[in-house]
Length: 196
Image 1: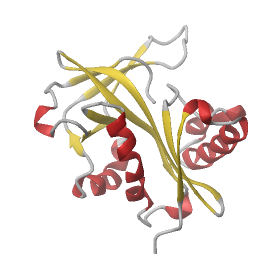
Image 2: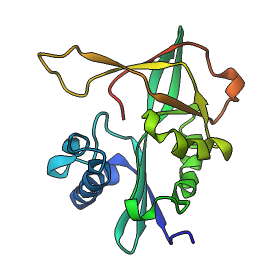
Image 3: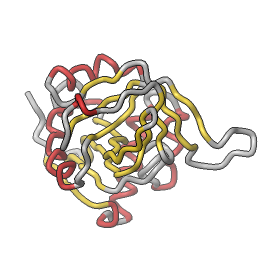
């Protein structure tokens, strides 16, 4: 049985302090299950980890925040081609709702992606989430692009680390205004900024 979730679609500047605090708690609990390091960016009421979203889809139920996905328009370079995309990130579902199909209800964000005027939505996830995201691919919501590494700037400057990092992650692409046949080929994606 799918949970009863109400969705709030909002621009980042529409969030109040209480919203950020509630989301921060949600992310700490959700991401912290995979390691304390993953919860650290959300300390002190911060509701973002790297780049700050432009737009958010937040699902609520009787217990509070149930799910979240953030969106941000940005340029990436795929091989030699510069491309504006809507980057998707900060995807999370409250642990007690996992496997109940709530992820598919995030389709509420699709009209927002169309309004953003981008040809594609783009996101990355750890390889450990492959089984989870393959469900979206089977439903036609996204395609996994294989054999691609992603270079991003770090969200903060660290004197002992290089300013960019290169990751081997799963790349997901959703066609918005163009078909997947028009996605550029390349083995490297340069994200112009930190991960969402």
